[in-house]
Image (cartoon, rainbow, N blue to C red; front, top):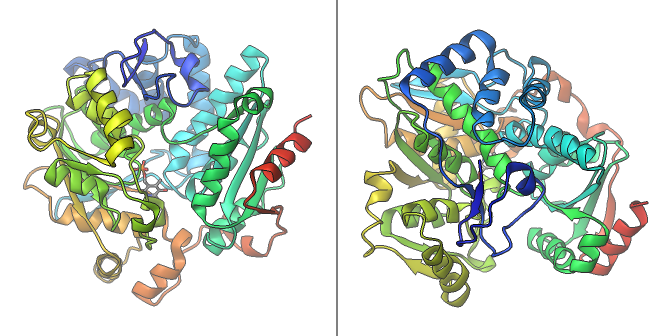
Length: 475
Ligand SMILES: *Cc1c(COP(=O)(O)O)cnc(C)c1O
């Protein structure tokens, strides 16, 4: 499989070329040159692979269609090492459970950090270690997190050879549970940096370091952000696994509702649908930061300034722009790289929005690609968490609640609606207590983590300070 850029660069790359890279050189995002089609016979075979041999073998089937520069035996070993009962807590890895009236919850949050980001990040950790060893190289991952991404990255990279993680976070802004998860890691290759500032300050520091090309090259600086194609690819697998659990035969269809921020998770659903997975609707659920809902309702994609970005009780969806969205628009426009470049590289930079309402392709987002959308507010979240708890005795996290709220408005008779559960409630305990008056359950392995010793350095929001810190710790 060759990979191309959404902004038109066609110079062919293979999977491992783009694995350690961020954006394409022309500023676009990488996508496969085509989506391999899974016909009825293959879908039946995959159904039986998942049911009889398990998630890791299904992951290998999906990944091997997109990766031709890792020997099959090695790729299979990497999948088996990643998706284990020990790490994900159940033989199904992503078990499906019924909620109500045709709505199901697919559990993606039983990995090491209790958010769905583990599904992709755990694989990425193993792929990085493998590829760096093969090249005899090292990588220093520099990131900014408001919570879920940083912990998922650290738990995936801890103890991995050839990799260090430098993770900045805004001091005192993460939930106590999230802080404890990250700061209690004692691995030599993990560095937590609490920045005196807000998330944007952290991100600005990371950008400034990455823009210093000399420094970046000298210290082998890389990222693990959600535009990484390998992360997206890993997420395609659980759409298949959810489908196989919800259906008996390949003529059945399902829909998915996906709590969305950067459009990474739901973009993987789009890829699964393009491969031929029988998906009826892909419903994008946002919180008050409704950039995506606005697009699917009006055709206008308008990025927000930091002053217009709301701090909400589903913080992992608090985005000002959806960094993976360019991938879908590229497909929507018939893979016209020049047009995509004009919208994302030009219009957004110039005026901060583009409007596709009058473009003939826009109506195809719903009619041809199956997209639909909805949004949720803090009050909706509280009501949904409370109602699901009182009616079903089940606690759901704030992001998943955004999904359930939107899913309830989009169920169709006879089509199972699968809501992706993106985190466990213990990560966002304050809002759960506000909604239900009760403390959420805590998986036993996290008992008492708030009291563990912490390994974190405080730092001013200063680019020179973080550069010196990296320099000191890379030798
Ligand atoms: C990252 C995250 C999301 C948003 O996922 P995207 O891929 O950015 O759309 C939703 N919920 C939780 C809990 C997350 O951590």
